[in-house]
Image (cartoon, rainbow, N blue to C red):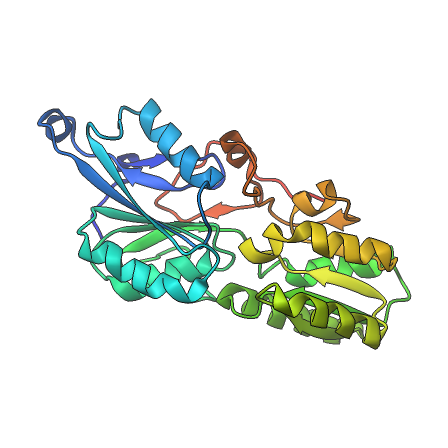
Length: 301
């Protein structure tokens, strides 16, 4: 476990909680330049990355003066994250900040010594990023969205909205480890509720048409969409499909409702075009013990 006290970490974002270790004032005055590695599955610009930069500026870490950012963008190609993480380790950064479960896992696999601060991770324990929320151990810490724990609850809400549903199409990115856990939790909840869940995995634009066709063929009564960077990016396409087919749908992020969706019940993941301060309203997250949070938690419904 890298040695940091609670006050040695900056909570950059109220709920999202990406962080940077504060060093002793004497060290900072000595003129050391810190190197922060940023590993993202997305493409620039990213609102969370800009929020990190903005908060660090407020705390006296000025890019080019006493801090240098090393960016690695997967640009939607998750299979690139492993090599990008290794590249960051090779560049000898002081800390690595990751966005999303796949990025956090890639960083953990790449180094056991460089401190890792992860955010936007649905289930850190279930996905293997850390062994425990209470005692994360090792060289990684960050936040939990409780996404897996709430998977069954979303299905219950959908059942309350449409009491006579018997078959629900679950639309999700089947290449994201965190999504696999949520899908399993949803399937378990469906069994208890007596509902059949049809798993529709999609991870690229080519698969969309086939996925939509499968939903129509199965005559699903409702649609449940699990949200990660990929499905969030293409939310309008998913929402429009449900609206055009008059299929009741529930989503994990309020951005889907803003795009015309019916209802949501989960943390709100800001879209690529959202302003940096959107992240200060990031809801329903749990920080691991090493962090503090400046914003109240809530459930967006």
